[in-house]
Length: 158
View 1 (tube, helix red, strand yellow):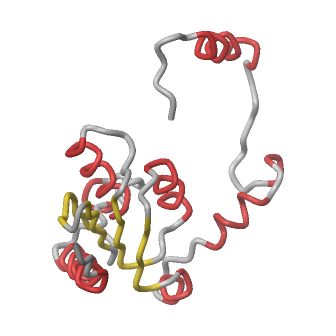
View 2 (spheres, rainbow, N blue to C red):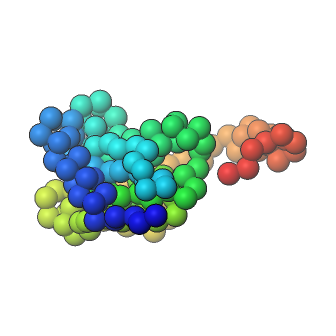
């Protein structure tokens, strides 16, 4: 079975343009393919849904997981119009597709106002030095839930 990477990537780019033209959000599109068949596609819907997590990759991952009835995208390939941002990168690693192809990179995105470098920088900082205040609180109340999870016999590992 021949996988036409450029074909699927062009489709992701077309979705980016479609979403942008429809006023759904920024110029980003994503396609998820399994066994040389598109199982999910999406474009950015951040501003149209007032959902900061509605990036094309995240929306496509949600759709693909729903279709496959699984929380992992084994043997799937993600095609995205632009290098994934830090949030999408995390979602991709949790979903575990086998490959990711992208057309534009983070420098291209920064040139049009989508600069995620500050997030990469924040990740490297100590919690107390981040722009947004993070406060660790109620650890003793939280630990029993983790301990219960650890002892749970029927948990689903991921």
